[in-house]
Length: 362
Image 1 (spheres, rainbow, N blue to C red):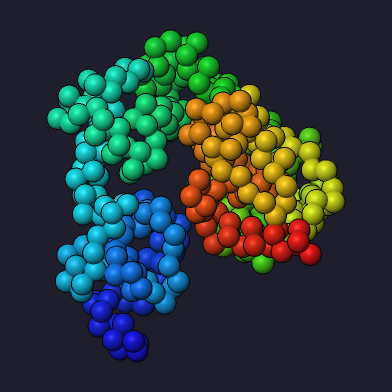
Image 2: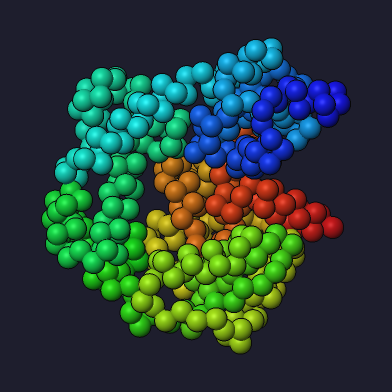
C-alpha cells in the first residue's frame, strides 16, 4: 500500500495529528479515548488508545476520528477494549465523578453512588476500572486530595479546606496528608519553607534528565523533553522551598544516573531522601531487588510483599515513585507481558528495558 493509499484511508487526519495519535497510542493514554481510534491493518481490528493489547508496528497502524469511520473501511471493533462501548462508559464515569466531586462525605458507598446515577454497582465498578484504572473509592480519595492541595495552595485555611473537601476530622486529614504530602498540611500550605533542594539538568539519550536532591540524598529524577517543564514541576510542588540549580552537589549522582539510563550496572550506592508511606517504601525497596535485565509483574511484587490482594496499591506506588531509574519502576509490567503506563512515556520504558537486558546478557 503506497503513501497516497494510506492518506486516503486515514481521511482528513494530517501527518502531525497522526504523530500525536501514535504517541498517545504507545502511552495507552486514556485521556485520548474518544478523540480517535487506531486500527491495525494486519488484523483488521480497531481499538481505543488505552487498549491494553500489544501495540502494532507503526506502519501497520492507521487512525480514524470515529469508530464509524474505521468500520466504513472494513475494520472490526476490538473485543478486549470494546471501543464502541467507550462513550457510554465515559459518560457514566463522568456523571459519577461529578457526584463524587460534589459530595461532602468522606466515605464512598458504591451502591448509593450507583443508584444516584442510575447504574448497577457492578457496572459502575467496571466502568471506573476500565476508564481510570481505579476503583470509585480510590478515585474519590485522589480527587479529594487534589482538591485539598489546590485549596491550600490558593491560601485557604487548613480547617476550612479540610471540611470543604469532606474530611470528617482534623485527625483524618493529617493522617491522609502526611501520607500524600510528605509533610503536615501547615508546612505544605506554606510551600515547604526552609526546605533546600538543589537540582541539575543534563542531556541523555532519553532526553532531558533532572536530578533533584537535598543534602541527605536524591529526592527526584525526572525525564522529559523540556527543561523548563521539569523545573516547573519542582517549583509548583514546593513554591516556597529554596530551590536552586547546583552542579557541584549532584554531579556524582547525576553521572551515576546517566550510566544507569544506558543500561549499565550500578557502581555507586545512591542515598535517597524521599517522603513516603511505609507501604510505598516497601514497594520501592522491592523494586530495587529486581535484577537488571529482568522484569516482574504487579502481581508478583504484591505477592513478594505478602500482600497478594494489593496489586492496585502496588501499581499506585509505582506511579508515584519520584526517583525513577534509582527505584526501577520501569521493570514492572502487566501480567500479560505488555508494558503498563509509565510517567515518562512507554517508549522510554521500552528502551530502558532493552538496554538493561542487552547489558546484563553481555
